[in-house]
Image 1 (tube, rainbow over the protein chains, first blue to last red):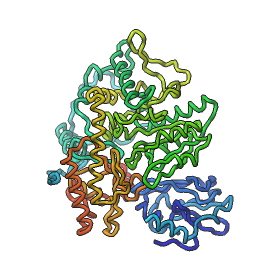
Image 2 (image 1 turned 90 degrees about the vertical axis):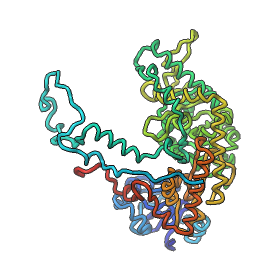
Image 3 (image 1 turned 135 degrees about the horizontal axis):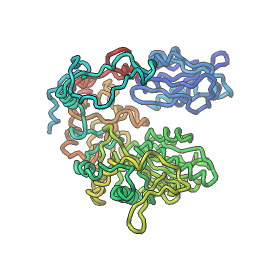
Image 4 (image 1 turned 60 degrees about the vertical axis):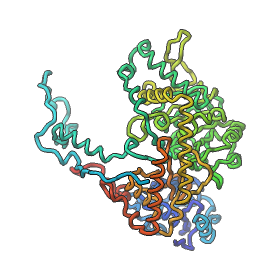
Length: 127
Length: 494
């Protein structure tokens, strides 16, 4: 299972990537493995405010529906429109084509997110 | 000991639409005895359809045969064990159905005047009393149409209570072992939810509650027994804590089948609870028919109950009380799902207090019998004595590639309905098994024997499990494709 080194992670298995001052968010390979085949992703509207640790959307698989938790607080600049028709992109490419939202951070929570070592340890404890 | 015979003549029944023959009909309509009206004169062109709907043109025997054959594909509690955890798929005695079908009860109309409805009102009033006694509450409303509607009602009562005291509170605490409808009901009611993690052993602790309790907490919502099948032993202590902070205690009573005659939530400090009559009290669950989700409350919530309530007058007659100024109002038309109430009433009267208690004890005994048997076969993450249901998982089969879904599908080949899978979420790959009091030891042994063969196959010939089911009308369906690209109509234009 791959956890890219350039990303930060949450204990709820979202990832965050800093990209020219913006933060891109998705879910980790571990989340995808646990969820199985993803059938729907519900995302917030562009312009919505999200709060670190609070729900920003839901992800549905053949097994269950789970909440998506925002790694940081901020404003939604863009959402991955493609997921509406192709939720399988999250299964196929969770760190690239399966990204979910792009945020304009309102604080500096990014710096306190888990790095790859801390996240890998957390996942190991789950298994 | 052998598993049930599963070979049978399963007809590959085609949809009724393809059995249509133009011009054939199963009914002869009488001649028109009112003046004919030109449809074009009644409706503007924009509202008129251009093509007739493609209804099947079939004879009466074709219709009867089609639905009779199709019904053979159904699986139901009258056909075999249906251990769907969290759903309490128990056998519902036919006597309760018979009682609910008595014409004098079913031919009433709710708009008849009160003096003609005295028998129905008496039944409703008595049933309210029975449920209040069973669960330890001051009063019960029978209006809510099902469990989630009961939750809505309970949360509206909680909001009304706080507002009446001049304080709006915005948060509801919900353990991670609660039913999934609980947070949804809170959101619908404008509350935000605060998740509570349960202990290693699967229980809610006062410490976890204390850590997040403040004066903005409107209530805690506890599913008891929780979705791990465990009884929340510290519920009274937790209720005291929440009350101390001015909050209320809601109990999700969907799992009440594990408690009858042994534990009354009202006695433990629960302020409000919904019942699922269609789980615990003799109405088939999951049959597509109506449910019923009565809500019981302690004294402090009585003024807010929905109107109308059914009251007994001093002269022994019954009347509807609409004059309750603090009421949250009406929740639905009329007084609730009457047929479901009748079955519950008949069931309670037939079993009596001792009988209900015995049903609960047998349900818990059956689940523990399975727990003890399953521990030799599968990973049982919470090995403590359980209540009405037991959780196992596919954890120990990881190396074989066989998953919980494969086990569930393979059970169908042995003639069992699969248990609930992948719930509760706190257990990865959960199989949630609720045998209920219905099953005999022989049936439970067959179920365990089937699981033993499946686990052996998983280790020795996993393909047999992964390709299941083989003996059903259709094999493994592509659930992912069905969810991603649903086809919601048969034939015709897309």
